[in-house]
Image (cartoon, rainbow, N blue to C red; front, side):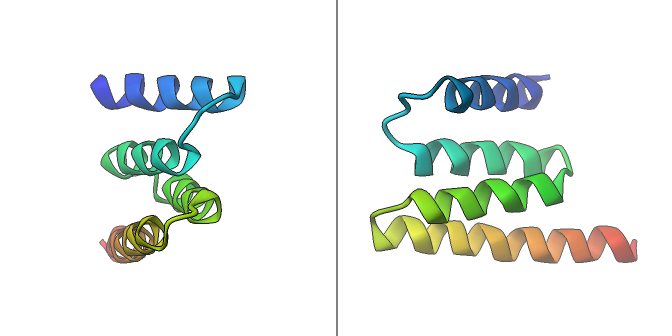
Length: 79
């Protein structure tokens, strides 16, 4: 599906190097992984986004996504 294509494309770009906005790329990767239900991998992508972010706003966005992942992962484990 489209989420799979997004995940593959972003991962390929990050592996290749030269990505100008690693924080943005990891946010996109994390969002796609959340849509696929891959919460552990999504959490890693959001952590990488926060680490790469130079803008406090981007760090905050990554933190909010991390909270979303925590809630969804908890719900998935309970359900």
